Every structure is written in structure tokens, then in C-alpha cells.
Length: 247
Image (cartoon, rainbow, N blue to C red):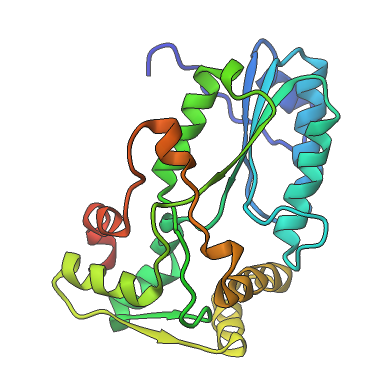
């Protein structure tokens, strides 16, 4: 792509981080959710501060707090706290559940069995398409002065359950897809069988328990529509665009 310089760096290596950041003024901060990611991200924040980055946009999480039952949310909170005390200006994006996460185990079980498994029961969640998160991040990075010091909760436009997803996938793929709720214990066994590490399973099931119980995890935010001037993508949009992954 013209005007784009690609750099691959190990974010756990300070010299590589500095080489990647040097000369930039705006930074989008996102890593995987592996245990101890907060330490890595805070290292990037400190390097950005030393190197003169002016604005950091961090992808955080809806439930980021120091008392969350999910280690992922607690680590995001630690990075947020580091941002609050840093010199660069910042904006924090707090999305919740990504539609694109369905392209992993959900797509696998739909292709193999025509079944969606989840421990959230009848819980309803305003899942968001990651393309909408990217669009919001781009808007903030292009016009940072409007978004200084803001924390934005990002969701889809309506809270839906996995029965709803099964219906739209049935429509998009032309094959019958059903939803089968499972217990937390069965969900743990299924994740372990896929090779997911125990700490990650604990964090994922803590989030699932919040989603099962409802409340904040079911609340729809108007931020995507307000910042982008259009409605967020729906699960029907997602199912249409990614139907091939579920066939």
C-alpha cells in the first residue's frame, strides 16, 4: 500500500518497540489477551511517552475494572490506569463481544454439526462487528482533538442471543443451524479439548457468566452510530458477509 510502512516487532522487546514507534505521533494500542499482556502494553505506553507520541488510542474492554472476575478485564484496567498518568493524550475504546470471534469454535461446530454451543443460556449481548470498531478507531486517530480523554463503550445496535444467531446463520447458509446451551463445566471441557490454557478458560468463562446474568453486558451503547453517522452492522450483515465460513 502506498504511504504505508510495515514494521514487524516483538512488543516484549524494548529496542524493537522503540524502532517501531520512533517518528510516530499517534498510536493504536492492541495486543492479544495472553496472560500478562498488561505488562507488555504498559511497556509500549512508556516507550510512546519517551518518544514523543502525542495521542494513544487503546482498545480496552467493556468490563475493565480492578474487581472484575475476568483477568482479561483486570489487565485492561491496569493499562488504562497507566494511560491516565502518562503525558500523551489518550482515548479509550471499550467494546465488548466481537462477532468475528464466532469464526473460531462457533464456525467449527456449525460446519461439523450445525450446532452452536454456549454457556450463556438465554443471555442477550449487543455483539459488535470488529469492522465497526476499526472504523471508530480510524475516526479517533484521524481527528484526535475531538476525542481527547474520552472513554467510549462500543456495542452493536441491539442485544441478541445465540438463538438469534442460529436463525440468521440458517438463513445465510441455507442449512439448519440450532443453538444448544451448555453448562459452564461442559464449556470448560470443550475449551480444554481445543488446547486453550486454563487461565484463559477462567477469564473467558467469567465473561460468559456475566453475559448469562445480563445487566451491563446487555446494554446497548449509541456511540458507534453517533461517531460514524450510521447504524452498527447487524448479525444479519455479519452472517451474509461471512456465510462461507459456516458452510
